Image (cartoon, rainbow, N blue to C red; front, side, top):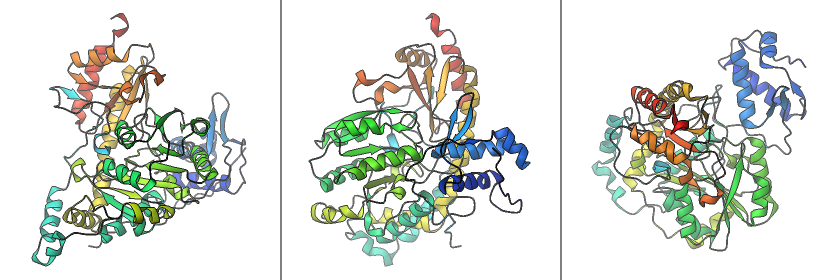
Amino acid sequence: MELLIPLDGGSKMPMYEQIYRYIRAEIRKGSLTAGEKLPSSRTLAENLKVSRSTVQMAYDQLLAEGYMDTIPCRGCFVAKIDGLVAIEGGGRNDRGWPESRTNNSGPGSRSGAPSGEKDSGIDFSPRGIDLGKFPFSTWRKLNRDILVDGNRELFQAGDPKGELPLRQEIRAYLHSARGVNCREDQIIVGAGSEYLLMLLSRILGPDHRIAMENPTYKQAYRVLSGEGYPVFPVDMDHSGMRADLLQTSGADIAYVMPSHQYPMGIVMPITRRQELLAWAWREEGRFIIEDDYDSEFRYKGIPIPALQGMDQEERVIYMGTFSKSIAPAIRVGFLVLPGRLLSAYQEKASFYASTVSRIDQNVLCQFLVGGHYERHLNRMRALYRGKHDALLAALKPLEDDFHIQGENAGIHVLLSSRRGVPEERLVELAKEAGVRVYGLSAYFIRQEQNHYPPTVILGYASLTAEEIQEGASRLLQAWKDVENC
């Protein structure tokens, strides 16, 4: 088939995004139907007189969001999407990013490996972040500005949900950047995901069964099981948690990380998100906990809107954090409760005081208001993308022996042995070479459910480009003859 896409060379919107938006709109309104074959990227590029990479970027985004399927040796086809909810980010500019609001290993340790002293050598820890570009001077100045005589009331008890101006800024950011639809009164600020999950357990009550992705973020499992909930691991496929297995699990709450599953790095397409929402809507009392811990870091295409923004029945409980995007020590996270849970919060949990100091909340609020957070995010995206590209390039010699996955989002990648070399052996050989890598097996609730090939995880955020290159070189030497060990 031939697509006649009107491109505007004078627009500020990139060509790839014009192509992506046009095809997405045609699919949404039914002009392109499920199963219809799309032109190849080469053919479309020739017809539109643009580079093939431009078309490929548009196709990659459509594929990531579930609007398109690829079949090996056959081509690209329009995906079957039933009941798709249109999501338009309310504060985006013409590049799909949040408008500037400038006026002049928990998520911070998302690792199944035990914490401890860093080994001498190169540590590919998935827990680290790069603090070298953190605007310390700005943060100090905001602290000084807030701690003036006129702000003595900040040392009094504040709103249990968190400071209203901060919640207003979080609401605005979530709406523009993540497509989240909420009011300020639905947001609860707290110190870390562990506290927020414990608070959520008080709101939900004890009579629930929770499904979690398998493998998963073990700290969330420890908290939820520690609160007395039966937890059921649900296997994933290439799109994330399998909705058919969720249905048969007997759970009535699903804990998922659709924007970037930890640790597998899967970005859940819209088709699977619709399936999960359909599961939640099917019976009263079902909820989805959406943990959106590091959605800010996506290196291919534009960010996919949050699952919460697609929810028409108020069944999604949204969780976010500033630990990855600013610093782990900030320890500021937030819940966005569905409207239907607000009365339960008022009755069962409104007497719990906020666990984040009012001073820290106000500093963070001013960091957002002044545009410092947006500028910091842009710097970190560029920095992490550079490290991401450096790591993939350095790992290229390993591609014959390892399948590399989880790239293009987050701050870690996974390497799976094509030859079945045991995970423990890979970790041991790396350690002998002065490199720390982390086994995937640590992220399973029950080890007998690990049906994946031997896999190790490499985080790169806290390493320099030189350390990444050196670490990859050591791994290449350590693992090159591993089949003979």
